[in-house]
Length: 294
Image 1 (cartoon, rainbow, N blue to C red):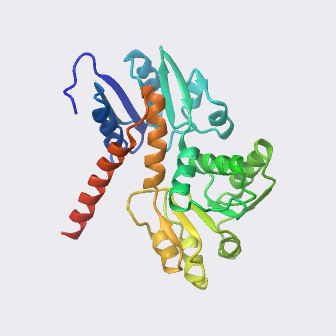
Image 2 (cartoon, rainbow, N blue to C red):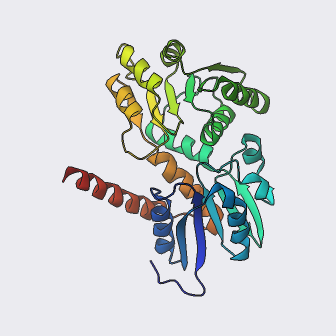
């Protein structure tokens, strides 16, 4: 990475917490590969300071930022313009500073879709999908899958109202009409897991109900794909339960990387050097694995 000077362009990740994030690693590798005089920083922001932080992007001429939990919806009122899709799903994960005006969009949905195609290139969108959760990431994934042609969607959430609101959004904004909702009850989850080939876990914590239902079903789910959108730890408790039941499990590293490539291009206006960015991420993850074995 170049030494910062008066000409260095700054980019940031806003969220709370952000100390665990691998976004600086990925983006800084991209800057280095392209020889850009730029740096990407992770900035923890208190909820009460969110508005001031976004105004600070303008004041300090920060080139743009990514947004992570829990602020993907909270940032929207502070932006000058928002992409149609991001406004529809009420979720922004990328903000570009365009000559002092903040433009918000989302790369989460497309990032997940690209990650899905990478590990399941022959995944049939005619197959039902189950999303567990109804937050910003879940809305982005649901909207994108529905726009890509998903025929049937099941939505499970602890708050059934939130699941039903998301179902209504999907039915209104996309061609998908077959959208079922359920609470996080074992009986309903068991039915959903039996029906759906793709399961996307979008909750911030491990749900006991999900672990229980995987522990009770017959291990006949070898053709099922289970994605946990979290990437730390590398294998979560719900992933372990799904793997024991026979599912193919994936954490959120694929989504993180794919959405980062899309965000990089929006922030810099240049094609992301995907190979070099992937290599930097792989080296880090390999080192983490070695440390875990010590």
